[in-house]
Image (cartoon, rainbow, N blue to C red):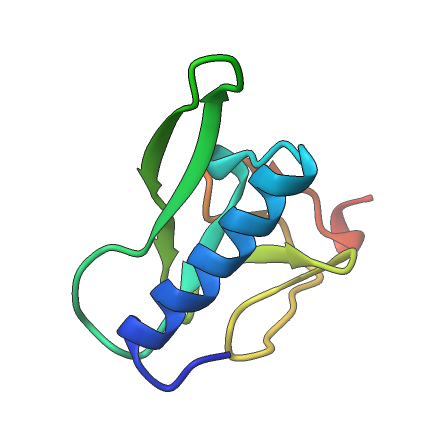
Length: 101
């Protein structure tokens, strides 16, 4: 958690550095950020080629407060709202609600 976008970028940089140092694969296409602050995109660095040391920065997808996402197995919004109906996820996929089953 960070109070500013600059702080959020520092947190993401630390996570990126740790992942690169430990050889953990980061999948930016499956990552997202939610922030109430507007500003520059938050970018995550990945190691593309260990031999050459080539790395690449990817802008994280920014979700809105009403966008549905999966957190610890729960499908919810940043507001904490859940739904028993079908929902459209932030990445465009659709999830079947319990009422539809």
